[in-house]
Structure formats: C-alpha cells, structure tokens
Amino acid sequence: MAKYIVRDITSVFCYLPYGLIVGLIVAIILSAINDRRARRKKAPFAVWAITAFIMYMVVMLFITFLSREDGSRKGVDLELFSTWGINARNNAYVIENILLFVPYGFFSAWVIPRARKLLSCTLLGVITSLGIECLQLITERGFFQIDDVLTNTLGACIGYLLFRIFKRENK
Image (tube, rainbow, N blue to C red; front, side, top):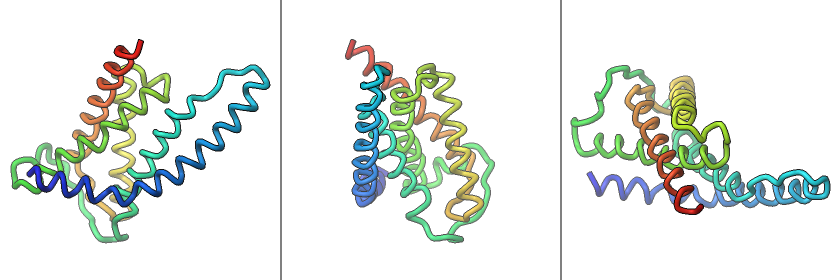
C-alpha cells in the first residue's frame, strides 16, 4: 500500500508549477492591494496564507479534474466503506483522499476566520468534497463515492487540528 501512496503523491508534483505560477500572480496582486490598503490605513490581507491556499487549490483542481479525461469515469457508490479492504490499491486511495484534504483544513482555518472552529471547518470540508464529487459525476471525470466525501472530510478535520497546534505553538 505504501508504494502506491508514494508513487501517487510523487506523480502530482508535475502540477506544482501551475500552482506556483498562479500563486506568484496572486501574491503580486495581493501585495499591490495591500499597498493601497496601507495608504488608506486599512488592515492588510494575509498575502502568504491566501497565496498558499490558492496554490493548493490549483493543484487540487488538477488532481481531481484536469488530470482526467472527460467521460473516462462514471458511476455512483453510496455504500459506506466500500473501498476499504478490497486490496492495497483501494486502501491507498482511501489514505490519499484523507491526505488530499489535510492542507484544505489547515489553509481554510488559516485564511477564513469563520473556519477557525472545528464544526465550521468540517462543514466547509463536506461542502467542498460534495462539490468535487458532484462535478466529477457531471463531467464523468470521477466516480461519485460517499467514501470520498467521508475521507476528504476527515482530512479537513485533521488539517484543522494541525492548524490549531501550529497556532498554539506560534503564540
């Protein structure tokens, strides 16, 4: 199982340049906006937090949609825990779905003040995951799996908890 996870994680590194390019553009724009806000004596935006979140979202967009061909996958699986235990490949997918949303929970809590509560961050994770699953179903770029919603939400919760630890350590 570990070999699948390592191989799959390293395969997404090819999407990092896209995230970096978009992140650079966002950082430049936000820095310019912050300069203007400073002249008006308004609080600045958290440039690095927002930039990191957007870079992550670009990479996630590639992983969940743009790396897949239109019409290549279709179907709905509403059976809970149907992907776990079948084989090492499927178990790796479950772990990868959790890992995919850990940064989401972390960055959401960092960037969105309302997501600084576990329930809010969890709901945001559920809504985002459901959105991805529905779009994958509509575009036939992925299966709609309730397990994915569950594992993505778990990942968002773990990311939120890591953010809380990070915040506590940096006080």
